[in-house]
Image (tube, rainbow over all chains, first blue to last red; front, side, top):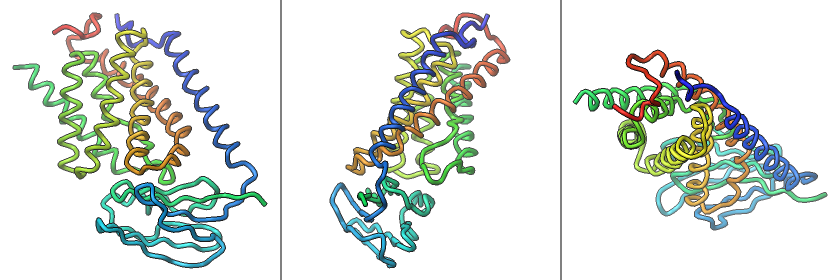
Length: 121
Length: 168
C-alpha cells in the first residue's frame, strides 16, 4: 500500500541533482560578480536602457513610461531602491534596498528592471 | 457527477490555500519564493484522479484565482508556472519512477523555472537569472514539504487504495 508515497532512491538522486545545479549556478553567479564593487544603477524597461546613474550620487528620480507606469527610484549611501510605484503588486517596492553588484528589483507589470552594475577597482 | 463535485471542492481548496499563502511573504528580496500550498491539491488530484483532472483543476484555480485576486497580467505569469510544473509532474510520475516526493519536487522546481523564463521573456532581461539558484533551492525544499504532506493526506483520504488513484 502507498508505495507511491514512500521516498525512493530516484527521488534522492533528483534532489541531489537539483542541489548540484543550485551549487553550480550559485558559484557561477558568485564568480561573475566576485571582486566587483557596486558602481552604477541601471534602469531598463522592455530591455531598453532608460538610465545609468552613479551610485555615489544622492538623488531621487521618477520615471513615467508611455503605458502609465510610474516609479520613484531613490539612491542614497551607495544603495538604491524603488521607493514608490503605481504597479498593482508592489513587488519592486518590497524588494527594498539593493547594494551588491548584480542585485536587482523587477516590476513585471511595467516591464522594468532596476539593477546594480559592478566594476573593478 | 460525484467526481465533478469533488473536483470543484479541490479547486476551492486550492484557491483558499493560495489566498492564505498570499498573506505571508517569506522573502521580499527574492520575489517568487513560496511554499506553493496550492500545489498540494494538484499533487493529490494527480494521484487520486489522474492527469486530465489535475489539468482541469489547475486551469480552473489559476484562471479563477487571477480574476479574484490578481490581474490579467498575473494570469499569464501564473499559467506559465502552473503548466510547466504540471507537465514536469506528469513526466516524473509516468516515466521517471519518482515517488510522490520526487514528483512534487519536479513540480516545485519547474514552477519556479517556468515563472523565471516568463519573467525573462516579459522583462527582456537576462539579469533575472540572478534569482535562479535561490528559486531552485526554494522549489526543491517546497517540493519535498508538499510531497510529504500530500503522501500523508492521500493515506487518510477515504477510499484510498494502491492503484495510484489513476482509476475511478
